[in-house]
Length: 279
Image (cartoon, rainbow, N blue to C red; front, side, top):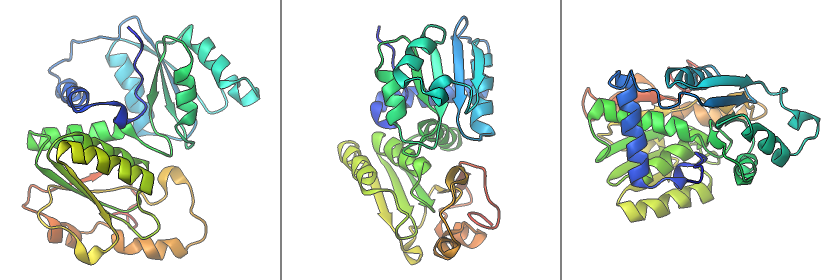
């Protein structure tokens, strides 16, 4: 069977996505504590950028599922000395079963690695385009909280970054979901990503909307989501942009204005910058 990669939520259909999310919730609840499906496997964890949660969670998951992890820092592979991505992929695939990658670059590097004829699965742990495993974790939280993955409305405030892109694609893939993105003008989800999510949504009956007006927030949402304004610490230059982002901070007043009941939850992909994206 050809190896399957985990590069984008768009590579999954609703059945695949639901299966992965439901399985993750079962693992998280301890109901599959004895399951070790990765015994005998070796997982490379290649993080080119800082990470606390994602690197730790992938490493812990590999160990708990029975695999042996190998960690690579940003300067550890000979890509940095001029070796081609293709040769690097051929070399690593002789040793690794899975390679988890985090980078601030585009997904093209991962697609190049995945295109090489090898038996090593590539997992996207964040690119500038998309953060698919974050979306899977978020859907798991929604399923744990509400017991379903349909008829849920999520309000996303802040920048249309890789987390927002993955969230839009994942909620568009599942039937009967609604996502409202409210972003500073000029910092929304890029048009190609937004249209991709909307196209998926027309096939599933979900709704993906984006606008920039904090005076027009939806009411009765199930979850409010935000992300740090400088994704992965990448600066926007100067300080003028902060004034444009300031109205999109999640505050107690915002939560009270949009919440359906006391059951409305707050989500953040973390790390949070307290006093900026959330009070």
